[in-house]
Length: 327
Image (cartoon, rainbow, N blue to C red):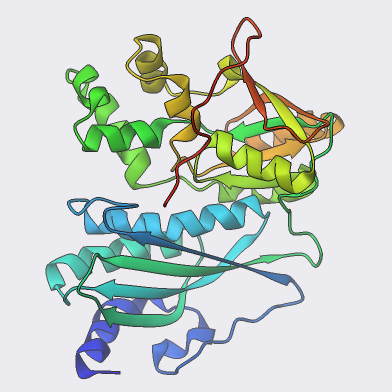
């Protein structure tokens, strides 16, 4: 470790390492006590120009980096346990690092997911933050992508499409022009892109009731196809039932965006799950107690075809692409 890296860690990251197993970041490794549970491991990186914009506030970048991993844990039915961080920086800029560490620390406390360790490196390229998060589930209870059965309801949390439109607003696209007179709507949509709302409060309900689950990161249509593919089933979705925010619904009604942008845009970080019919009401009740909105948008059906999205008249919608692609 260089003296510069050592100084950076002591100043900004050591205060985040509150778990005893982190040893105050003075060791080369940490200890995560299993406590009889299975340990769920997930990793995601966010890269400047791909997952966040160069002008995004540092605290929102930190929150997004952690929250996209927390969203994966939520879809697995896991409770957060801690995370390790790799931070690739062009330079050790205090004006950037201070708010970054503050935002990361606030979310680590909010979600009960302390920093356990990691690495800081220099890069000549774009900023990159990679987080590996750990969660706990009772032994053998992790919820998989596989397991959906014909007759299950397809259920999604929150609202879909906001983040994709928020990115469009931050880039000055058609949505920004259409909402030029509505600052509150623009701010809400941009916020949904910059700072996801992982549904960790729903993790136990997902674990108790879902046959299968996935978090919606690359787009509702594409992630549903992944879940169905892993489960060996298909699905039929009633597109008008897909939950939309008022701002997104207004842009759709005005023709500013099409339904394909909403279901394929990505960055929603909602939970998509297959709930058996006889558990649906219990799941809705548990979601209400957790303060998370859930909506039934279709059914799992037998077959191996790509899930179909139907309009209000029952006609199939043509989707040019199912999800955001990194390549």
